Image 1: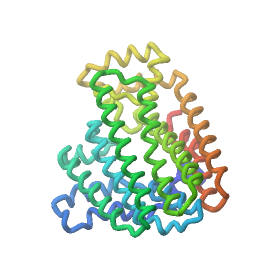
Image 2: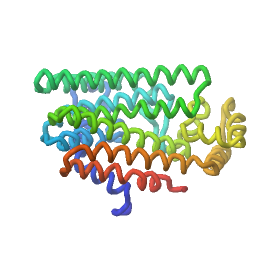
Image 3: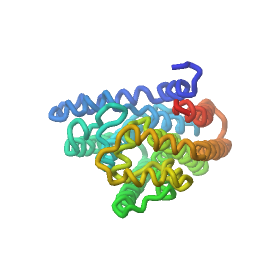
Length: 335
């Protein structure tokens, strides 16, 4: 990897601020002797899942308001595990059995084991968070944010399933899903600022930064899925859960819409058909549309940061968000 690339710089920043907790969250379930019956599934997870983003955002947000990032360790570990449970359950709901030539946990061990594993990960997360010694006001604020996160993510999944079953998923609906799911990163920034004892204004501004970042990451991942870079596109077509980028492209290109319509009820979709779908999509203005959305969200995030005093953490947060447009382009090798 080019050491001057945006991808390298992003990973470097995340490893610096969240690498140790990412390692801990990878090993904590494997090393729990009471879970020996799930040891192999958790070993599989530890080899195929890593989340330095969550702890990095919580630590940097805490430091941005003058707090000690070390105070976020246990909370960040707990939130990382909650995100892991989302990750496992999403694959069950989306019926994702493989990604990038690798099976998911449900693809390797079945949906039942994935469901149980996600439940135990979530239980471990709350056992860690409940033991943290914060004052009651701070603890109540963090618990409320976590509950709100869980409630919103549940609402998103229920509504998504309803639209999937009704066959009414539009680009507007998918964009709503991406935007609403940005509450994940928003919550991380808010929790970090609360631990650092930031003011209401600081908490709100960092929350807005997190919401903008979350939507950027969601749009980038969505476009990668639409290009079949994650090798999930065939399953998305069969389940009629197309990514936002492809739904938007269908509204622009009648040729693409007709081509997709011929595939929706097919049991087998060959690679040649998928390549034609991707080719048709790239001939629309969707890539430019996503770029414009990402650029706008970067500007919004920077406006939120301008309301805070500049320090090492706010500089790191600004650097990370400003790398995203370049990261987007670099992560799409066929553009």
